[in-house]
Amino acid sequence: MDKVMRMSSEKGVVIFTKSSCCLCYAVQILFRDLRVQPTIHEIDNDPDCREIEKALLRLGCSTAVPAVFVGGKLVGSTNEVMSLHLSGSLVPLIKPYQSILY
Image (cartoon, rainbow, N blue to C red; front, side):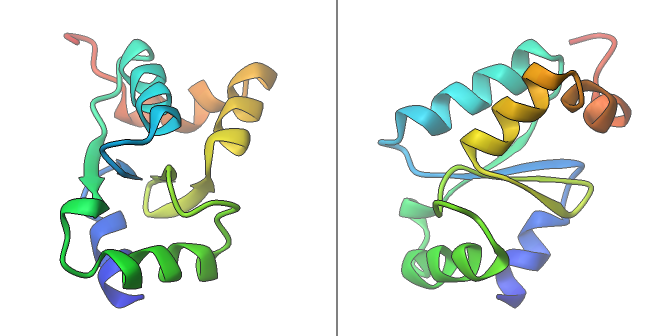
């Protein structure tokens, strides 16, 4: 779990994904459309993939990927991110990480 916490705190917006996950891709596109350049960790390319998945589930993710962290705090998976976006709560959360030049 230490590795996940360290990785999730590297940048303002961090997304744990798998390369074959279409929902992961959709979440990445959403953040890019909102002018945020997230740090992406494709865990299927990490030798500790299984441990990372277990740690993400222990932290409270409904599914291991995508797992979105903002400011080092777990936001959640696709359902949580989309719910925040539809309610208008996502943009204020990510505002400090938006790029004006993006």
